[in-house]
Length: 354
Image (cartoon, rainbow, N blue to C red; front, side, top):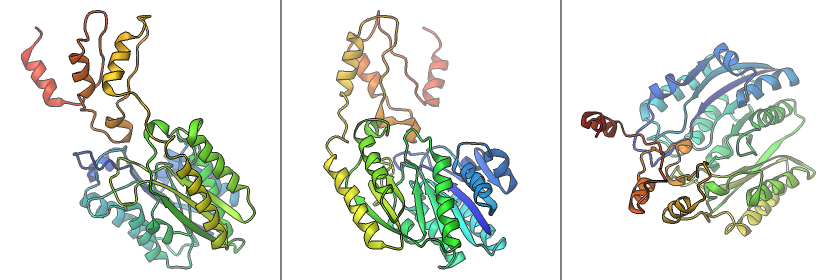
């Protein structure tokens, strides 16, 4: 049993003005063939899960390409064409295949494709045809689309934030793929997109309303005939049509069953929509509370969720700094913050100390 494994993984912040070019991938993590095994065999990634699954389920895994860089701006057309083109060429040149495993993010956007992950899935399906199973893993912060679902046999998304279960979900995806190839199951998946956004401060899965949603997911997983259940939290910094919360349920040959459970999960999430919105203090209140906090030698940490570097933010927002100045922060209290502003640094160097 020969199974191809590929990944073109990116979390795209479309509000970021700096585009993500080919060199951003080439200079970060762009691996081919055995290079992927060298880096991921014992890691905590989807590819690591694929390698472990190959040993567990006794199939021949052929890693072809892995392209990854951190959250940044929209992927340039040149970068997409070159990386996606190489992926598809490798898939064609090294076939035939019994199945394909994709390791995508689910929130990638290029200049040409607002649903880049869906376009990758479509191109892979075009190469291998309708009868070769294609299974894809996604990040929990995925904007799952109908294009992605219609061009894969199964999608399995992470269920934890922070993301601690990439290996487990990849093994789960591989299990579905292998059983599909052997004719033991016939996965069918139903996707429901919910018109809501989960604020970033409410996205941790260990507590609060998001934990309750994952508890619902786990409840559906226990039902007869269900192969897998995924919740896409959505990635709000990708301003695209498919952005938002989604639920995808995979059953063994029963689309009505998958639809029933996906709609139930969607209704349960919708009922929690108010709890999932931001209730954090304003910038003005945050600075005021920080100034008034007891001076016990410990810092007060303020997170600017609108300029989230972990989500591709530019790290150049000065709103907190401006408010601190307006409130007269000085003397006993000081503010330490990081800014990405090369031109500003040069101006400071030129001005000198004084």
